[in-house]
Length: 131
Image (cartoon, rainbow, N blue to C red; front, side, top):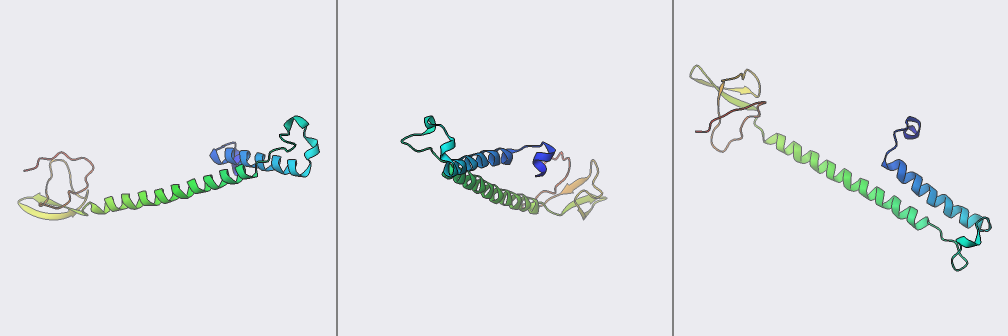
């Protein structure tokens, strides 16, 4: 277990310790009930925690599945937003318009045009006036 060797404990370490403890305690109760004092008995039985260990494991796995699903949807949404940005900007130089790739040959005071109902080019810094 690399997590234990490195000393970088995380949530899964805590869950594993808790679930393992509950499971091993329950196994010990079933295999050697005479080792435990009578004060631990309720109605002549000692409680076991197999169900708790199983439910905790299922809930953690369900949480992981939800997180994975949300992460994939977030990645798809970000990819969709990036696809909305146009790949070129229309630059005006010496009275002539030319389409240039985003960020290429665009310096301060470069005039770029966009047409109505089109996306604005993705630029690092932009100060603009809309006419």
